[in-house]
Amino acid sequence: MKKNNRIIEGCIKNDRRSQNELYNQFFDLMMSICMRYCKDEDLAMETLNLAFMKVLKNLESYNSKYELKPWIAKITVNEAIDAYRKKIRRREFIDENEDELENVSADFDSADSHGWEEAEYLEHLMECLKDSEKMVFNLYAVDGFSHKEIGDMMGITERSSIRHLTNARRKLQERLPAPELGIKKA
Image 1 (cartoon, rainbow, N blue to C red):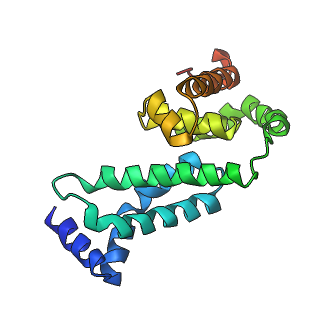
Image 2 (tube, one colour; image 1 turned 60 degrees about the vertical axis):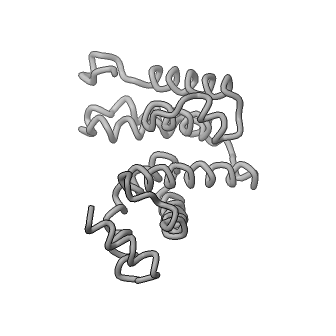
């Protein structure tokens, strides 16, 4: 805790070494969050850097009574949601999923032969989801937000959040291989 306080104080004073130390300390956490919400590594890295800038900008308001890790994680999740909203507003949201489903389903047939671990396999399965479904699934199932919170964050209704989660679960279940392939259904 004292180490973090020293780093935080240095960051507030714009000390580059402290900022670099904080960045390195939380890079893995922030990148894993960004990769859950972004389709490619470049966008995830851009989102991570924007989130880190917000962390630095808001460190003065951080209450050291609480742990730093959840505070940074929440900022990162919110930045990933902001990136998603910007993407939709710029009308860059193109539903490529219909074309990709055929290519991805061919990969699922040979999933066992690739020897993927379960986490990698789930990430691969999730690439078939629409961005909105993936976002809601991550917020609900991974990050533990309620449908009301998700609706508020994404600017959708609570009912829409539930619908996106239901669609995501259905699509994921449809794409799980048959038990005879040796992969357990969750």
